[in-house]
Length: 322
Ligand code: PEP
Ligand code: MG
Image 1 (tube, rainbow, N blue to C red):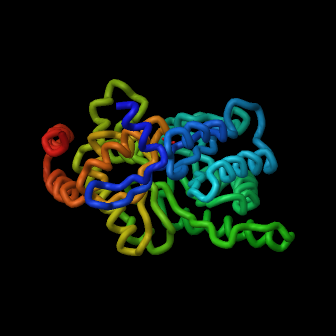
Image 2 (cartoon, rainbow, N blue to C red):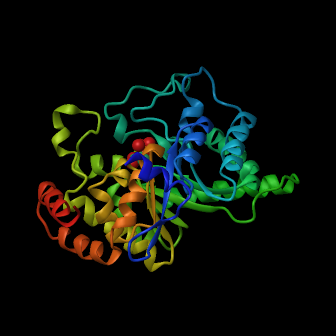
């Protein structure tokens, strides 16, 4: 099997009936790029930039960030690189920010909420990204967006920093796609409205599942509620993909679910455009998708949306995909 997968390193990902999808990788640092290239990644679908900020006692400077972003963009050449702005809070702490303890960190002051409040941190990161943008195919993604207002504000700040840099004579890429993570149910429900303003969606199922099921993703005692194939989740995913396509935008997924063998046939059927996963899952996923018929998976997806439980969906996929 490994030998069969190795042959797929430089291949595109195309279903048996000719539908191309993109298989991208999730990375945490520029060091992860080697794994992306060695596993045939067609892009970076999620660069979790918070690791630049963690395990140290002060903020990374603008130049330090610029070097990291530039290295990733150059390393990927013309392939797309989706960089997520700082997603700190929840389970990821930054001691040097001295944030007060919260009762519900996953529902609290984190990610875009913190960035819109402490704008010096956000603006520094955006400037580093804009300066690096000329070295590759950069797309910027905002995490934990719950309202359209947050997206508009984040985008306006990005635009302000871009204008400032250009006024100073710094080169910035002409067009940088800006999108959002869909990981909060309110945003999935309002995807049709968001789709008019964003360039793309990336569905963060790790959080979307926890928030939809109201089940902390770190709490093992309730892990039975962590149900990726629950039709409630699948219907939300469908809403997001359909809303994107209606406006001519693309929809990806960067939660664990995107690399899951049971989920992939359904996601292909729902029309997901980009699957972002750990690099080591890419070749296996490509081998699977190459064997699947998109038309048949569309029928499968339609039927599982009508089922009643996580287990029933697993069983149906197991029968349809052997
Ligand atoms: C997600 O929530 O699915 C996601 C990809 O983000 P993270 O796992 O970093 O919260
Ligand atoms: Mg998340």
